[in-house]
Image (cartoon, rainbow, N blue to C red; front, side, top):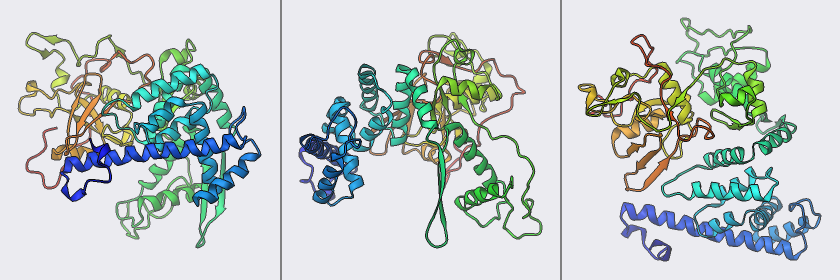
Length: 469
């Protein structure tokens, strides 16, 4: 309905629900117009005989066509080259993606992600499989993925369809690693780097640990402390000195130059890959897919933690007794065991609110159906089927109650916004190969001595009563 009314409806006359749908209709129209623009630019390149067996950019005439487009559309030559390349790729290699863009099912950003993340897929048949599967997931009703999440999705599908191609692509990418330092303005410099994902994840962890290692009175922002951490590392220092100036500061201003523990980098992988029985890739938490060779290299010098997936039917933790009672007493305790908490975080990968990419390691564990502290048997069990990762901000948002969420036994969550739009998020931590139909549960019944591994319930402002998570 709204597609026919775009540009005709006054926003002041719309309800809140109508405004959300109207904005979505405009977005679909923008996508369709973008597809036409890319198609026109690609056709111009074809008529100028730029198209060949290789991609646009490797042919000299492309520069002349790019200049023509740049002047005609008042954009830079670089932008014109980008449009030519993407238009060519959609027209020749990714026709289904082009059609989805024309229908407004996909926007330009996600079409670009598909084009970028499938560059290394040389076999047209494999590329067609990847494209079909990716589009099916991106266009599923209620699915909301950011550009980054869409990129991880493409990587996962490519890895499941063409593991050998992932390995070859990684080898080519590692050869392009570099770090550059360029002069900036106002006496500053710009540092840019391209590193292997595992090393980048390790560096990020080190910078974060150094940045939060000062006392709460330090006046610097987190961003400033992370920048200072890079400088400290270049000086051979392993910690940041605090700048609060207090004589009683627990982290005084003299930085540590000794050794520090190795940073935590979490990789999820099937045991069969580690033994060499199969070459299925793993997942680097927060970063995406790693090929099997890289995973095995990391595993040679790592601490292993076993996470078992048992059974063939997604069920709640423990067998059910007559009347629907769950036999495992751990399900009636508020705090999950260390093993269960680790498994839920491994399954989810990141905050489960639509579009959020905060890593699960930095998230609270939320009881989707609130835990009943007065009568735990009444519902809200502490099981994989009822636990999900939420960053502190979105945990509070859920607690306030304007957003509603339900969770399927496999961890799929269905969110309903204040304007009643539906959004679905799926776990993307554990690799999808080999786990799709498995029941995710704790590897052994937890005991009373298990340490709780759950963040304290967030406190919304103002809280009418303590939230029953």
